[in-house]
Amino acid sequence: MASESGTAASAVVTRFAPSPTGFLHIGGARTALFNWLYARHHGGKALLRIEDTDKKRSTQEAIDAILDGLDWLGLDYDEPPVFQSQRADRHAEVAQKLLDAGHAYKCFATPEELEAMRAEQRANKQPMRYDGRWRDRDPSEAPAGAPYAVRIKTPTEGETSIEDAVQGRVTVRNEEIDDYIILRADGTPTYMLAVVVDDHDMGVTHVIRGDDHLNNAFRQLPIYHAMQAIEGGWEPPVYAHVPLIHGSDGAKMSKRHGSLGAEAYRDEHGILPEALFNYLLRLGWGHGDREEISREEAIELFDLKGVGKSPSRFDMKKLENLNGYYIREADDARLASICAPMIDGEVDLDLLTRAMPVLKVRAKSTHELAEGAAFLFKQRPLEMTEKAAGLLDDEARQRLGLLSERLRAEKDWTIEALEATTKSLAEELELGLGKLAQPLRAALTGTTTSPGIFDVLVLLGREEALARIDAQAAAAD
Image (cartoon, rainbow, N blue to C red; front, side):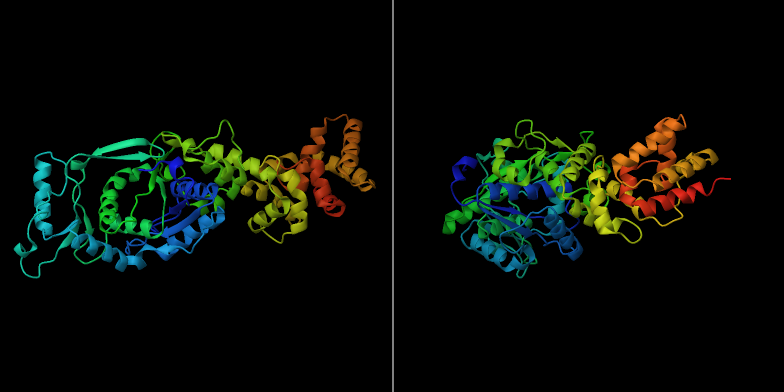
């Protein structure tokens, strides 16, 4: 088996092969990312295969969700997607070649016979494996016209080793692998056969996938070896089995840990694609102590040697913190276009863009950005939160009236001038600045949290800011 370094000089071809039975979950997204990065790092090809042979569970909705998630993450592919269900004839063709060459055989065992075999194995506490009862029998012994499945002949003695690019050398005794079905009685291919044929036909050189597939590699190798003997050119790929993602408590990742579709991180959690890209990259792969790694740097740095052998732990807070970093780095107009649909009412995109520098300082999600910007587009009279309303007693409203007079006389509507004017009034009234600023924030935003109050005054503009202050001042008894 070739090693990672041994094939790096040749044309690298990777593939991401999801089953469209649901969304692009976090583990699948990371697998897609690692395959894409490895291909891009080596100047090779990244391919996509939709493994939609399970017609009962595969849906167009799931296919669309997977494609949408990949596109959002910026993972592009070098050829159109291959749909496994459209290749059944090719899979059957390879099964026939294996059958004709004696590397596979017809199994006429009935479902009842197989269940009886399994029941006996359970009773004797034996491994549940096909016992090879038709391996060396003549098909003529079966009743005329009896249905049959096609099984691959696996080695019965010795052992098989894989030089896995992540796990290292892994060895399995051949007796542990039974003669599994490659073509069902109805003529449809099984997963094991379809994967090998598709990987070969697509020219895949590196199979990077979760380590829950490690056992599958040992089941798929006999097909490679048999087809290599039949027609040549069926070299097995380099395998790289990546440890699975666990939740923050160390248990296998599930929905309760946040195992959601990529679209849910975008739509429900307000995560930017570059933040999820960076977080998934660091989830099981490392380069020194680097946390923030750009897309371009990731392509330059990524290799399989940096993938750890232990499961990584998903931490939503770390993702949110990283998201905050990317929000601060993001273009203001882009952030405004993302947030605008989340805000009720008519949104002035230019104003929202201008507000971004002060809104994004502490935000960890696009939802927080949108919530923080909502005050800009509220209609008068402002709806008040309970806390904000509590700040606006009669005394506070009278002070707002005084402040309105001073601000109205201010010719220079800038942060510095407005701050100086407000502080001056607070000193005259022998008040701490907060005694003016907090009621002012409530009057301007309807809430008790906002960007800096003088930023708020500037963003709202003289006319709207004064109108909001006056509306509250006028309510004093």
